[in-house]
Image 1 (cartoon, one colour):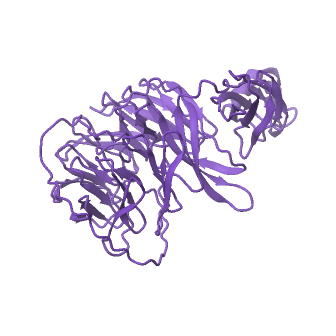
Image 2 (spheres, helix red, strand yellow; image 1 turned 180 degrees about the vertical axis):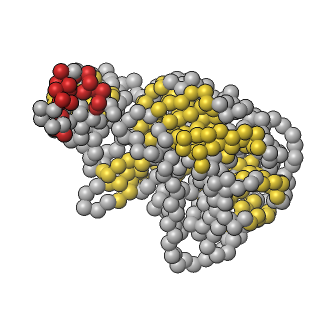
Image 3 (cartoon, helix red, strand yellow; image 1 turned 90 degrees about the horizontal axis):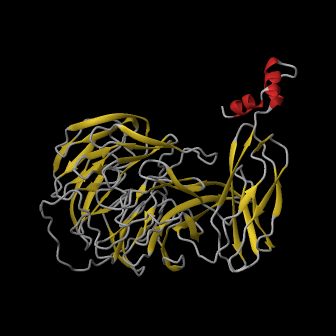
Length: 539
């Protein structure tokens, strides 16, 4: 992915907050040997960025019967570009770009919201402790802990402006590891006591922990580090290129790291290189499928599957969508092997063999808007197989402001309207109005409204109606640009607010003959051989 993380540094005057730590017994780190394949989140459904302490992105829940319907979306009047974490009860927690922390019930209603007295402007991910009682959160200036009822537990005072990156990882003993932008890695006990710190003088990406308690992290200095549980250096690699995302630990203990080069590296647990493989654009994220296959998102417009033993490419899936603009999340993977990732306007599910299972349109109810964004994180998976993804928009009008959504993708309401059927021409010239027919039915016979996203910039038809169930309506639309494939999306809702699945329909604008000189040999060919014109429009 070409999108890079931008940290905005703000000057904030605030009164220091003193917190008396809650007295608890410090838990010691053991070196118990057990399988790397073991991941125990103690019932937490999605504990942290990339799901678990090895950052695999692999859920323990089966999602095979998820049909890909947007069940609901929760509106936040702020930017959402973080991963939603999910506790034992299915409650989602998400921080925003406007210094807020939300708790949302599994039905899409708000439990509570709190505001922080300090800035949260970067991609500061959350983590929930194994007991399910505490949420950890980084920010531009603090590292803090909140009880799951929304009250403050403690704030970690490390002195000065540390620029917490905010990708906390929690080991099996409850110890939290968090890296900072200015190169500190902290090991923190649950009572706010610092166990140790390690300094490297460079940005630290999301750390990972193996089942023996060793801590791994990458850095902008181009190295992969391994620390012992006591915070001493075990080994580090030679310099490659800067890292945006942290390492991922495989089922056999292999460590995978993806720097800003055209190579993915695999390292043995002793730090020696196992293999490296050329990739077209190594700036994405790595996840691990149930059989150990590596799933890499963000290779230009591709999702790539790789053999963990040697890096050979097993398959790739190309995103062919006019909405794609170099933004792609990392992958979340169900225990059944289904792969979930998102890009602007869509979340996709791939079968384990790389074929498309379904694609669901992501929506907004605020128009006009200037683009949709999904960045940095991954989808999250709940125990019932529901998949959650966050998005954010620039709301248009006289003043542009950020808005965001949590989208829940799963099984829809059986009483909701059917998927709308859209019919009409599938190709034509730009700047010409074409008529399309739309039909949907309500199982309850309710009246229906329609919303259409025409796939071109700033173009939508927003909730027209009501119409009778089964009534066919007609709409006209034209597109400005030539030689573009547009993926039209339409959905229905009834008078009770039940939403249908999105229906999709493709339309291609053909090559503009106006750019070809009149009477030219090429124009004559285009007129005599329409298939040639279709071919050129694909270029």
